[in-house]
Amino acid sequence: MKTALKVASASAALFASVAMTGCGSNSSNTDASASSSAVSGSVSGKVEVYAAASLRNAGTELKEAFEKENPGVEITYSFEGSSKLVQKIEQGASPDLLITADTQNMDKAAKLDEFKDAKREVIATNKLVLVTAEGNPGKINSLDDLKNTEGVVAVCKVNVPCGTLADEELKKHHIELKNATTEGNVSEVTTKVTTGNADAGFIYTTDLAAAKKDGKNLGSVDLPDVPRNEYPAALTTKGSSFDAAKKFNEWLSSDEAQKILAKYDFESPQAN
Image (cartoon, rainbow, N blue to C red; front, side, top):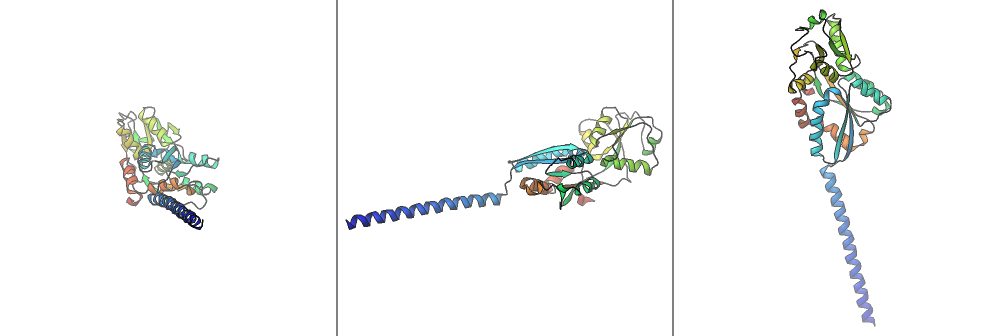
């Protein structure tokens, strides 16, 4: 009888030992898996980005490149004039990341609760240029030609970066447009000129490059005294607590992202 009890006791002890070893093994595997995930830096989720309209063409390739590296992430954009984007956030919109085409509109955004203590980083710069429609029907070959032309000249609204720069340039040269059309963002100005609904327009060199790639034969007049405008990016309070948004924001300053932006005629902020 005593022998039987000893055997049973030994069997129970062996079973308990095996069970404990098994539990320890599962715990170890779980910890290793979590550790591996942390090391890989994988992120997931949908990142909502509000970006200046002039980033539309480059934005698609930036999205594709980042999503390829981070298959669990989806980048969604809203492209509009910078002032419109800030206004939407003022009215309650809550994106994860904002990229404006100037520092002035980002300054306005910085005053909102959504950007409390937010850090901004300039990811690119751009340059305003005067373009003319195919065939140059308005006979505009210099900025001074705008003083006398009866042709339609498309300009962004003054509170939009491309409009602010154009307005400053026109005032500097004492030019008052006789037949102007005002558009909500630089993409709309570009469309006006490429479709022949405007004889000339103020757009960015990036939009001119995109139009030429699309087969549009636009002329251009350089504006050497117009400073390059900066594109600052900043996370909202929502985005600053979202790993995927933080990673995309950091990636925009990477060599890979900068190479993509350069393909669309943006310049690195370090180049200025």
